[in-house]
Image (cartoon, rainbow, N blue to C red; front, side, top):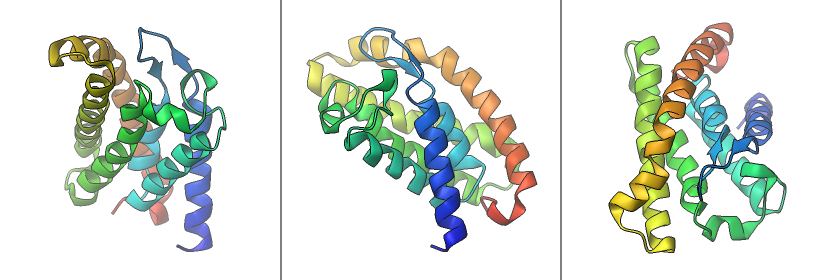
Length: 176
């Protein structure tokens, strides 16, 4: 990667690190703004920028920086009940980037790509939650998916508008 790409990826990682700790506790899985920041990082710029930013964010959290929800950090977070969501940020970012890379109608592709990435995130997070907690599918979905649907819909709508505007302002860093 060029210096410009590394700098942009670092700025996007910082964006994720600033938004991600902001959360509302809702049972064992909090509502976090991490997905909102990853939506923007992964859709407004090239796939590699969002993916690198997401991985840097996860590594920063693993090294103990308080960048995970509720200002927590540490390697142990990857193995708790919310660890699947932290790991799931990688397929979330990659899924968004892959859809937008091939999308023809860019504006309509933004929310579609984010919904697809969110589905990947839900699969990773819910599967890990079921493994760690011993919950069944429906019980896990009631805790890990249903409460997040309205908030994720709002985050996707707002992030789609922001990302579409950002990609128009920075054509050299566009997804395609």
